[in-house]
View 1 (cartoon, helix red, strand yellow):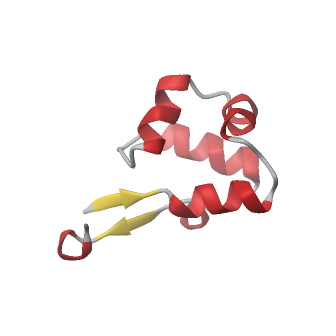
View 2 (cartoon, rainbow, N blue to C red):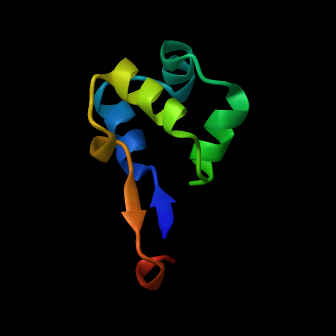
Length: 71
């Protein structure tokens, strides 16, 4: 399985937030934002912080993509 955070980036656009705004609001480190940008795994703690900051559910910020559908 691979991870896609495309939903998160679209949500930020809808909320007129920058990635830096999200990082400050959620209290996450810059290197964690780099991982998110690269669609790499991050801890559940980070995902919960993002969901809390944006007031959304986890399914609204990420997708799990089966290997046979990954690019």
